[in-house]
Length: 346
Image (tube, rainbow, N blue to C red):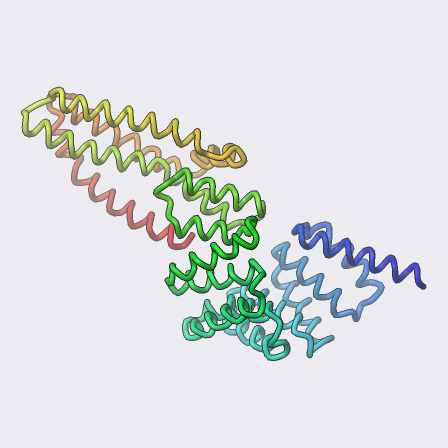
């Protein structure tokens, strides 16, 4: 009997380690084995719910979490798990109710306030309650990086970027590998400085290779890269068009604009290749051409550069520039709108 207890404890410790490493596929069979021996153990059903949630099987995860609640209704863990799964299912009101019950059962447990904050911030009328809960989580666990990250996320959802930035910085001061804080702080600092943004996202992915948010943000930078070159082409087009219209044809100034455009594109591309962290260089390179959106952006970029060069160098380049100007400006506005909407969603 003693050996059986020791075996169960050893397997339980192994499961906990695997869950911390997010190795759901390895942890779940071990949990199932223990559940076969102890089918009414609430804690094992909770571990199973975590595995299923990590694997993306939300329906089964919710069933497992409800089983925890049925076996241990006065334990906050089951209600907290229900809130997490319901949030993933976009059942925000139900998630808030489950998190509210977890807080009622364990008002001094910071994790219950964290989960409530994350659930309530998606319900507009509970946004302020979410902020209060996030502050309470920080009060109860001031040395936990996750509590500060949660405060940052809630503040960011309320467009309070000053509070969000301070919270992320505090989280990183406690734990420099806090992936969500690294990713979100990078987003808040903006992506104008491409090198800094790439380093921030690469560090976030090193801390958590499974971070889908950081990966999507990296995808966004890669797909948007040719649009930066396109913006330079549009500015060169406008400058070249002005110059050739005034001087009635190509001249040294229009040649200079062309050289600046082509040289700038080359230098910026080389500089970008040098600043991409080695850990994400291959992935970033694949994403530059890895989708229809990326290829379309490269086509638009090439078209913009070609029209700008023709405008600056050909004898009737100003005619070409004037014909292309209206669709290019219209396309630029549409592209900017799509860019902003896509960025907001990311």
